[in-house]
Length: 466
Image 1 (tube, rainbow, N blue to C red):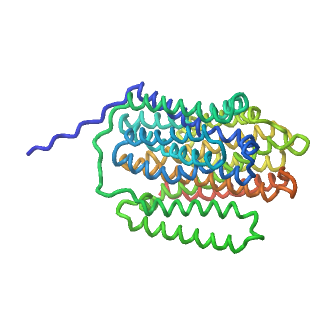
Image 2 (image 1 turned 45 degrees about the vertical axis):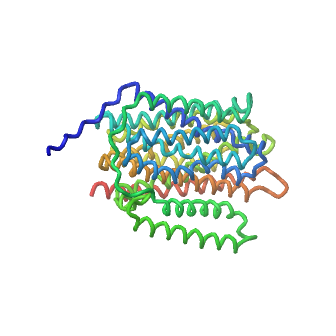
Image 3 (image 1 turned 90 degrees about the vertical axis):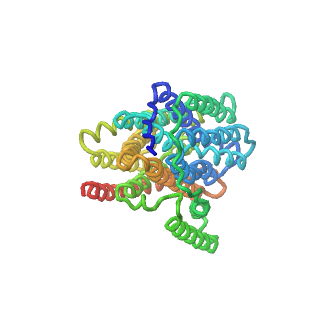
């Protein structure tokens, strides 16, 4: 019996790629609305700086859990099929956030919205499935850039919407856009090729253990300011954290179909990209959290008394810089090599963080420093994601890029939680305004952590050349 030759995948048209781009814009907008309005949310929901940091990272924690599962399912069953279902969860989360009357319900909405982090590797799968190799590289960069552009739009519009209408509408409007874009993707994107089931189910034990690891890590960071008053609790959490991490590693190494394939992580090009991405994003997220908080500090203290609308406006240059980072990174890598691009990005970020620690008495100091940090982060992370996506076999695209994106979201979560702990510890008794020294400490620490990435860059380049 003669085997039927495999049919080539249906090529995606401009309408399909455009729909995918619109979805990237909508999800980027929904992801970014919390950043400029966090001081407003803290006031309306009576949150401490540590609770504000928790709100800012819940979405990222969910993303770190969902992304590898989404990438694996996308590799197995097709990117479009999984993407549409994932965006249904995101839409439900956006509606919950829009209707949330209090912090616990808003946290639930953010947990559901975190599924959007898995949309990027799924988009990469769809692009590589339906476009030639040369065009797929361009499309990956375009989708990544549009996601950043959507974040810029959300950041700029969230403040006016929250202050002019309410905080509920700042979640509702981008959620409606996500629903519409998902419908367009479902209609315009070609159907997936038949799935490639491998006979193994989802690695639920690995998912549970990784969840426990991340949640315990966040609790440890949140309790760090009160270490003197509750050392036994903190010590117990560290023991639990070690147990979760050890158990997760053991389960993933033995699982027939692990949630995170540690064999993929063992590849030098992949794990070094993950380490570099994590370190860069820790430094970036500390600035992302600290700068809006400093803008919101009363003007009669050491801040500027800015509301949500002004904060969004002040953050706009940083979002513009981030949107330019993708194409700049690609041009620079082609002309000077990836090592030069990542090194330049890391050095630029260290300089900006150090300058913010030394000089932050004028609005333009913070605006300029934040823009430099956003550009540097985009240069580094875009180079890592694109390089990883194109350095593995086609059927491994989802899981490989998922690992880098997991490192990104964990780095952001750790950096934000550390920043929240620093501000909580640096708030004098009887006051709700963190001391200026707490911000300085945060910027210095972020710069020191980012400087470590330069050692990783050297190691990575040697490994890549070998």
